[in-house]
Image (cartoon, rainbow, N blue to C red; front, side, top):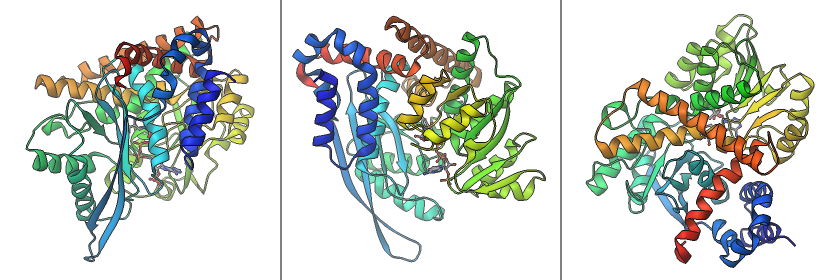
Amino acid sequence: MSYTEEIYERVVAQNPGEPEFHQAVKEVLDSLKLVIDANEEKYREASLLERLVEPERVISFKVPWVDDSGKIQVNKGYRVQFNSAIGPYKGGLRFHPSVNQGILKFLGFEQIFKNSLTGLPIGGGKGGSNFDPKGKSDREVMAFCQSFMTELSKYIGADQDVPAGDIGVGGREIGYLYGQYKRMRGLYEGVLTGKGLTWGGSLVRTQATGYGLVYILDAMLKEHDLELAGKTVLVSGSGNVAIYATEKAQQLGAKVVAMSDSNGYVYDPEGIKLDLVKEIKEVRRGRIKEYADMVPGAVYTEGKGIWNIKCDIALPCATQNELNLDDAKILKANGCFAVAEGANMPSTREATDFFLEEGILFLPGKASNAGGVGTSALEMCQNSMRLSWTFEEVDEKLQRMMNDIYIKISDAAKRYGVEGNYVTGANIAGFEKVANAMLAQGTAL
Ligand code: NDP
């Protein structure tokens, strides 16, 4: 049995009931096989893979809070501090009923390689809660965030672990969390990213993941003598990533014809009116269905199915495993030639394999959505220096970062004889830097 297969079996045996974590480890190990085989003796000797797949720390805690009716509610809170070989743990907090330890371990594991790809000194982590902010009053969300941070504040710090937002954690939640951190620790420091602009936030952070996704998509298309202008695009989700991916794609001349949420999707053949989506989602926290009620010619369909719409390019920006093999086949049959992941692991393993086999240009989330965490690291940098860069300065750094990531993953794929396989390229390029740092630091981690 190969070293990577051995480790995968060990992960499955030792982490029961965590299918998403198994899936993420398998995907990474399979595509690292070329590098591992070439260096097997060195890595086995150092038990490198055994150490890589084990989080440095998993913190699990109780989050009691009082709802508007005066009843005490209890949620589960977590922080997975996965790997600090190249910097303090960095990764978002997710508030969603589906959150459990296995999902956060999958996200934390992926984050190690993503953060490495940004070229900035940040390790991998992830956290969150099974709390559902949907339908809660602002006061309830604040009560929950304050209780969550009261416990989390014992384990994080600007040079230790710097969480950010993710699904269900936007500017409002970061504000409540940050306020409570200061109150608990008495420190005005860059312990969270995604902060408001008047209290330590960075310009472009809100837009960064979506913009970054389109910047790297553009870089890939250009290398294949293609361009975004005039192309028809599907964007799943209508949250932070989806909205700003749509904005940048539209700015570069593409036509985005559909967006979705967890209830269904809207199709607007004339092109999505993004101001309206922002009003529905960012201001009123409403449902995407309302779009079709307001725009003549737009059609709302309940349930999944966004990938059945004809397009040139698909940008899955909602959640994990939202695009399966059947969806991938339909996309291909309808002429889709490029897929770039805004969400984390939105394509199932079978869908990803299909894209690669069929020659569809495919950018995996760990590379293509790295602009968010990369810009978070720029926010940390500004906090440390006690200054703020302009929008143009940050945007220019983000563009450069995404171009560099494209070059790194493309070169790594070429080096190992799998040109155009950006999944393998991203895993190899992300892994090499972390592996070298772990080897250099001995048996400490
Ligand atoms: P948001 O909470 O802002 O938006 C998530 C969107 O996806 C919403 O439209 C939501 O619909 C939809 N969605 C969530 N869960 C499901 C589900 N189970 N089925 C269908 N639709 C669903 O999150 P973000 O935009 O921040 O994150 C989206 C993805 O991008 C996640 O995978 C996240 O990990 C990843 N990501 C985010 C980064 C960031 O900077 N924000 C950085 C890198 C990756 P509804 O409103 O109905 O819940």
